[in-house]
Image (cartoon, rainbow, N blue to C red; front, side):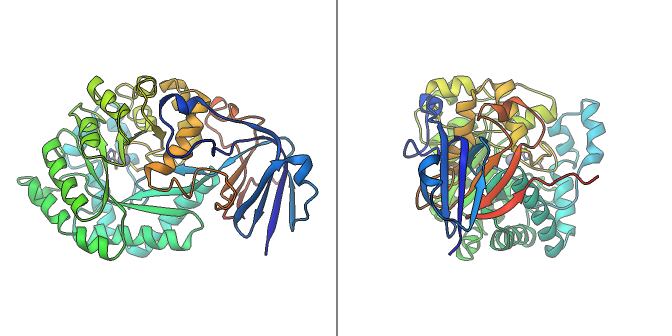
Length: 418
Ligand code: IZC
Ligand code: ZN
């Protein structure tokens, strides 16, 4: 039996003050426990209480947190983790003002990553995914969603999903898989995109049977898949027992937010150009809005999602990096927390809900991740920060001191040698 005591915690966020996902005003209520301690036993949280009480306990490892902030491990609900190649050669095009969807229409963008992913071996994709998971862990992420979507053929989509599964089995981080076979229209299907959707839908039973994904996602966007095509495809996915997600209202407002609600999707992601009606519908629903401000920042176009309107209307909001090789090339969730504060005017209290409980619910892990609670996995981060407001405030750097995954030390800030 291995035990670890974290004591002398300056501020502890447990995030366990409500059951279920936090909607609207509930995202603003954030109990903070000062001078607290946390006891981890065999990978689980076993005691949480005032430091002067728990300090007396014997433990294999005793960690003086020196007044630092301690929070649950961060949950990352939207990444394109597994891909071949990279797209730095497209940066100049973006600087010249060529729109993201034009680069895609010319066979670049997602399609260039499709080509690279098809050409990369399963082993090489696995090594690359493990590298990115390590980096995510170093930023305080302990659970991560991973999408396929750079194959759009049976062989490559299944290859990506197998890589994500193996990475989740071998890496300490938990990986939750999403099938995004409907991510772009490859040149084989240019004349008949419906045939691509049919081909991808044919994989539903295979993916289900092999336990390769829990969610099905689609890119509902101008020049990609329409609202009608998305509805039909995701309804089929639901019939096969998948929960669904949508890349909705990212660039052109098509009504993807409304569709996410209509389908009772687990999440509608992006929502940057969601309509007033879409926001009202989202607020009344159980669908979580996963906002991805990194893409607006990185593409340098468009407005940031209207997080304030969404929260004030009563929606449950999560945030994420959207880590991918084209529109948001970063694993740094802390930078995204700063963008949420600076560009979407979310408060620090809302932001912590958005990266813990609500992010966990967006990937159906609300009962396992995103909270520090007796009996749960001890996924815990010690931050080099005096309080929770400090993380979005001091931007662009890594504030992590130590990450514990299931009670084991996974990452510790290195020391400079010199
Ligand atoms: O590779 O560009 N928006 N899909 C939809 C992406 C961005 C990922 C990419
Ligand atoms: Zn995405």
